[in-house]
Image (cartoon, rainbow, N blue to C red; front, side):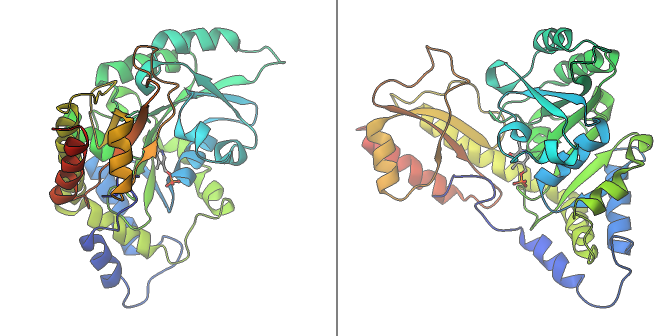
Length: 355
Ligand SMILES: *Cc1c(COP(=O)(O)O)cnc(C)c1O
């Protein structure tokens, strides 16, 4: 019963098989191989547009490189105050941009609003030499709260950002999970809504270690080959990244993996919220479930060996915040989560609740 994160499980067998199959023979190095070329072509086909694609091994590298393509060292990057780029990447975006400033914005459920972006833009006037200059907006889809921006919400934010001369980045570590719920095309969920550069996650959704920086406007990609190499993310045996991305996209495997993860999260969320005393501060939309647990249930689950994280309560209103003997926790499912794991977890929670 490991719900600590979507990377607690292993890799999808189909992707591992693709890595093994790519192992034989000789290929050009540094991503000039057919696996990588084909992976890039498939991503362009998936997104219905000629994209510049840069495969890397971590989401942190994908985000940091994407932001470096959008922001100069004296740039401001607007993001949610709880964004992964701000809270969980050890300063990589600042490092790869050579010092751009991340400006964290408030917003409930992990989402930035046009009003908060517009207020922030007012604080960073263009041309004022003592201030960093507005350069980029970065949003996470799904957000760090497991919530989603609607396509209209993305378009509103992107319009505002573009109007102010910003580039727009999406951290899509859970893009596949988001797409399953949104029920739209990859193009609609990204460039058609105004995204300029997407960090397209695959690792959390079943790859061994593979993420793509997808640049929808090739002009913005001009420096990225050098930035990636300089950042130590141009793999000499690049074929193994290409092979992972090929297998991820093949026959919509990525969609299937995300659907499984989301379904397990739905089962978990429905089961938990039916138990008296357990409440969810916001609706489950992808493969993450956030709940306030009574202490007696939390303790019983942990005694039984279940793994999950206590979560920061900054995003909760006073009404939603956990009481004296309650915990606010995050539970994450993945393609590797089984129905048995979810049901065992629910049984323990129900019996601890006395039902
Ligand atoms: C996991 C995650 C990433 C990528 O993190 P890495 O550990 O560097 O691969 C990026 N953004 C979000 C929102 C994530 O949850």
